[in-house]
Length: 452
Image (cartoon, rainbow, N blue to C red; front, side, top):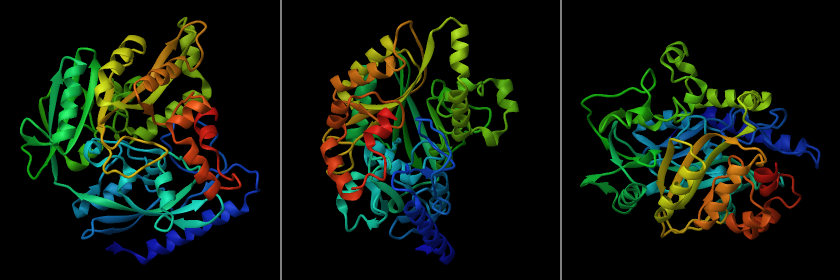
């Protein structure tokens, strides 16, 4: 195992600091982390919070055991940089560089290996968690705490250290972009790849897709390979998602594949003008990153600029629709039909997901025998006169419930308490909350993710 004494010492100091910070807070003071970056879309005042300085490093990588010990606030950008030199990667690497390992576990994460390896929390072997009582508990001794962390959003405790499994990689990824005219066709393809881990007789290591319209769907399958005849680069003038429509085959380094979506925040940089050729040449490459774009959006939310511009155009207002939702794969055509008719945002991301094993994760329950598809859409929609500020998001929730689906809670949610409890393990959550945060030092999950 590769590790350093300095890393271990710094980690222990950081753990002591965050525990002391929690103890020093008045009993009724809100508890939160003071993080440099966030991928949540529940914007809030950035002042205050517990310091997490020093909890952002990879502590050790064990190439033989294929494991890594990682501090909870470590970004996947830093985690991947530490594991790739060993020919290894986390089993699931969420799409954006500044998502943290702890954030992906307590707030969920997904990517194109999820059809095989599930969600990031499924590869956690053990964790040290700072609970609301101020105790640091090992999930080895408290397995119910580990099972309750996913989708808890820090309301049961903060993961200070995690030991995760790693998977071997090859240097390059060969991509095939396969077009389908109908939602039914791409649905069958995603289901086939999830079941067989192959497409057209060739192995599939990664699988996701993009919907550009009701008549233009793509499934992208990736196979890790040892050699490549050429390598594409989508960190400069080229834009990855546009290549999907024009190239049947492509090659990327494994590093560039893992971060293919970050340069343009999928396609959301388009709204900021970064895809215009002139703007792109002038925009420094070091600022073509998802965390930079999110800070711009946060500034817009604080100033209300986009709302003001919408009103000048004669629109009542705009509603941000930033969501990742999941439906059973056979319900995907129904959801897409509704989405095209009533919401109208494009493109849309597709990512097949199947739970890795039969363990129970009560706060985000999935049927281990069912293949799901994550559908991601991130844009604004105009509001008509008289429509509530969350009109479209609430409509999406209603349709999801009718399709046996639910959504991630990193953004706007309007569920009633009864709906929320039914979807996200309300009874189990309250038992865990009473056990690990009996005094309510940490926020309540429904309050944090829905009512704010």
